[in-house]
Length: 124
Image (tube, rainbow, N blue to C red; front, side):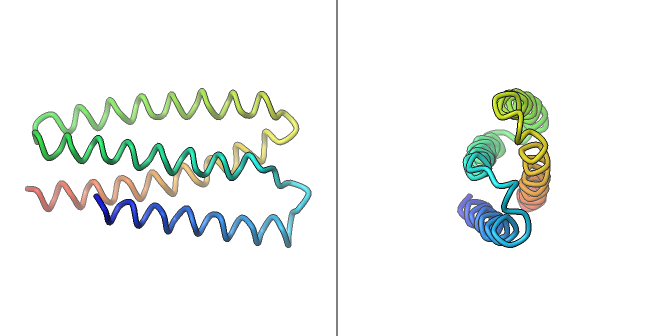
């Protein structure tokens, strides 16, 4: 559990530093503070979901695949609602919010799946 939190923290720090550099030096007119909030929302969600899946895997191997599918289905719809709502509220920054969300979502999703596969292989 702890290694995943460290890796997600490093990934979030990377996005903060890279975002600060890109938005300060290359495209400052596209920066919106809500991108930082969005990053922390994805970071928190990834860690909460991983903690729940980690505890599910420790309890029962047989229920893990169903739990994994169910929690990711719920997480995707929650993300969809939040991002569409956010983009609707900040219409002038909607494209920037959506592009940044997709980049961060895929990065955190890949990290989560890699860690869970590693965990399942270790358990079996």
